[in-house]
Length: 322
Image (cartoon, rainbow, N blue to C red; front, top):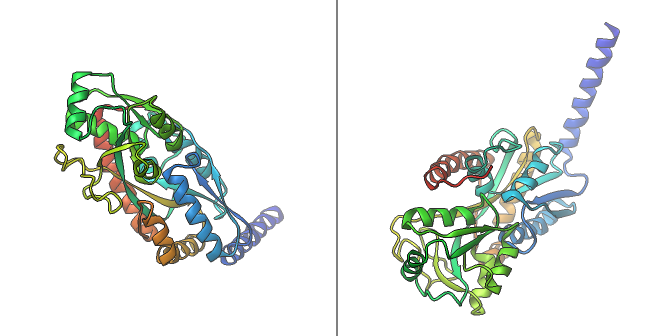
């Protein structure tokens, strides 16, 4: 009985200490895991958010790049971290909704193992080709691909990313045979695209935009349902000859499951404040992002909706990663 009493007392004291820690959060540096390499669209957003979050919370916020496996390596690291609010993930709709359908085995459950905090940005992808590719429109690209089945290559930031699935959706809706070349992130994929090692890419706009403006990449179309304000003369893929095509991505913050509600609420309030800051909105809008914020509950609903949408697309496309 004495042992049980001591155990109960210890648990009660631990709960009180944990509750006090949650109320005083944060009291030490925070690590924001970016599951893709430096230089890509997710990394750009991660660093912008980390900078602002540091100002609002009054503690250092560092970005920890953990690339690989379509974002799964970084996501798994966060899923297995202590649920104390000091390790967060800049996740994507690709990680949360595409990967569960694409990968036969995931080391985490995107619904059960994470606590949603807020969606932060959304953006179109852009279909870009190396200037050596003799196609100046989507229709010309389709004709070229059909004349050379299996010859044209498209890069992605990894199996299961929105960049990959934008390509798979394009293949399934146009009937073309393109060879997928996965990389460990958008930045190395763009590097090879610039060098002509691959022919095309359905890249996130922020990482390709400087090269488009410099004339080093040719933009044929954007993947969303509306044109980008940064590329107003570039049509959507639907406008360019593939009716019904629509593919976009969002990025947002999640914490490990079990993170105290008080900490989730503190983080959400900070992110909502950041998203409303004109300097932050202008900075990211200038790079092709649409800035937004949600409640944790809204983010959870979005994740479930995206899982249903992309699960069907993955099945239809036949894309699969063992």
